[in-house]
Image 1: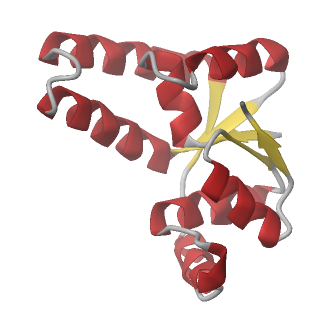
Image 2: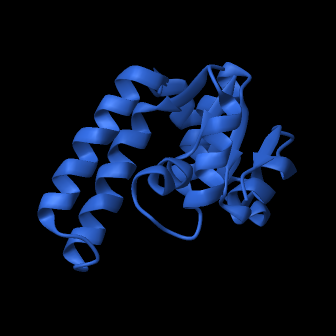
Length: 141
């Protein structure tokens, strides 16, 4: 199972330096199952709001992107809710502070580990931290 992190999902809906690689990754996935977390919904909404506040996108474009993202989630992603134990595990993962793992990414990683999924990310720092914690990673880009 592929676990898509939020930076990868953002690149699918907002043109940025990772968009071409994210689109290629999605095409290569074909009909394979892709998992994400409900935590990604919050992070995606936050990123869209930050873009609107910074005037990188219009409020209307933010609204349209959120609607498209929700349709994509419903049609293509298997959504995994964070379990209470995922937050405990995330805190334990953060004990290994030399990995550079960030809190939100630790939650993603705990869910990914619980499900035995392969983390798919374009975030190099996250990929390095995940590999240091013995998680299988596909670097997108």
